[in-house]
Image 1 (tube, rainbow, N blue to C red):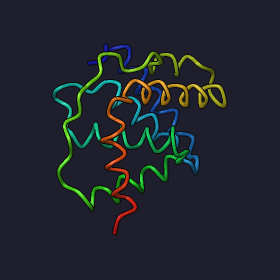
Image 2 (cartoon, one colour):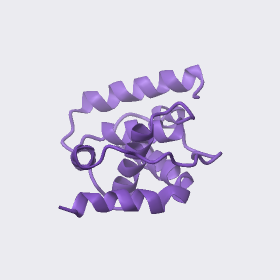
Image 3 (cartoon, rainbow, N blue to C red):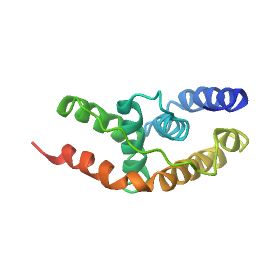
Image 4 (cartoon, helix red, strand yellow):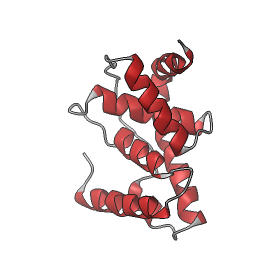
Length: 140
């Protein structure tokens, strides 16, 4: 569970990304990184699974936030049961507080990228399961 300041920083970061109105929808990456980094035993399997799929698609496949959002919608139509994934102790060294401390604009957006990479790397132990689910995107 994130501490109170981390939650405040996340909400400030959400306000920032939503205010951008960017066509790539970078906000999706913020939501996914935060969800995966702060998941616990009470997190719904769909929330964690979608966060990890979003991080994989963005970090490994270079999907934009809009493309990740579409993939989430497609997967929701194809499957109703989501795996309970084992949670690593370490969830990435970059936090929302690190990202929000970067100056708005290119620096902060690059910090979002580093955050996504950091969290995805921490969850690589679940990559096999995530890849199985991503393959559903390409099945009829």
